Image 1 (cartoon, rainbow, N blue to C red):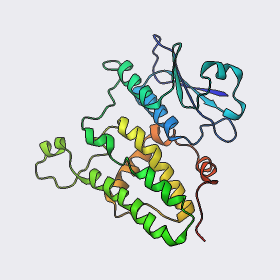
Image 2 (cartoon, helix red, strand yellow):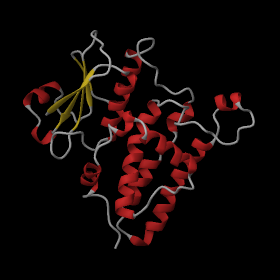
Image 3 (cartoon, helix red, strand yellow):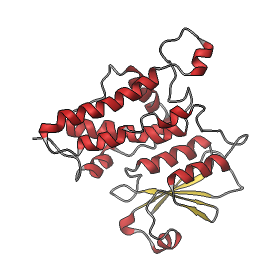
Image 4 (tube, helix red, strand yellow):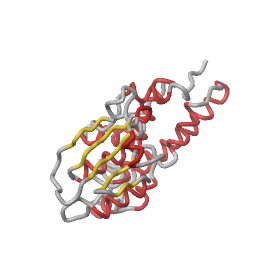
Length: 247
């Protein structure tokens, strides 16, 4: 178990420690979209916290006592252990609230569900060993990307308030021009999709999907996303036993 500390701003009233999946070497951050999601949330909140990478193969007894039977990610807030990712997100949004910390929830409920079916169809696509149904799986997966692209290209109400004649959105992210909880959930999954599809299917997200391409380009420019991503080798290691090369 390795501990790293991310210095952002100091919040002396609370002690926050995020436990995330460790890499294969046991030191750096491993491949886990749920861990990255919470890492991004804490970073965006601008709170002082400790990041602890956990190698579950060599987890110390103190960790077993802290969260017996749990898998990362989980959160230690003062002396209270939180284990469910969705509940941790809700807890952090409630506890780390304005005016001291930024609000990260979406203004539009539709943003929360954008891209929600991508990871499911991606998994079916890359885990399929049968060339005969590869085209079918790819089309289904591609349709989920197209659906997300349509959402990203459609102007949101506040954009239409500013420009009633707008036909294509120019926003940076799912819900507007700032990263939200919805982005923290979706972007780590899209990064895995991008890396794995290229390796196992020689498939890249089509540049014709301009909204999705713009979204990812904007995300990778942000340190909070780029620096919380696992190394590509970690993603490959996570998928080498389940993703299938087609022969």
